[in-house]
Image (cartoon, helix red, strand yellow):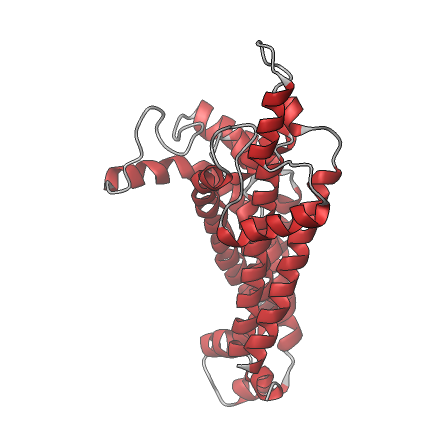
Length: 328
């Protein structure tokens, strides 16, 4: 419990620090977002209307400490403001409509890449120097080094445009209404997610593979592995119960950091496949200088990153009994 409270207080202070940066950075950007919003208006916009819009969106002429306290109060009450680009839609509604798609696409890709890469890395370490190890490890590194835009374009052209096996974009059939109570809708979503999910997964397998392979190779010469072999235990038990389990700790940390960044979405994949995730929302907010959406999404990304790092701390303590004894 003491370890839990120490880590919890640390991440809370990290959240306050991140929120402070999130408050300062957008205001340091040049330009007035409200004036930009009315720049292309066909009708004449009066200064009074611009001033009222600034107050509505939170850009008031008040001292920075007062704005900062108001900003923190809004964060913890769930009032994240109104989007400038998509006025009058609130930031909560805009991010809420995209966060599920990003978590589904990016989160699924990370979990799949972790499982596939870890299994491939385990066998590559156990059979290090073999033809399998000499082929699979360099191959995954080559695939990982290819820019994601190239992979996505090749996959799109081959399987969507050329062979026409899968749709070329969107999260579900254009013109259909999302029906979350229909099994047919879930099948449609899965069908549309095949290509973007493949592109998002294949680019991350190599990192998890090499991490697991290196971690496991460092443990294979340890005394407990030699003792397990001397006791006549089966190969599968030595590989998975002894070597792989003790090699998982760094991989769990890498997985938690990857999951924490999942909320930022896969910008390239989302753009090429026209997927309605948070990556596209963030890009549009940057172009429009939509401060409210930028603050909301960066804060959301920070909260996810801190949460999964905190979860990784707890999982590592659970997986490694030495840390539990050391914390007492």
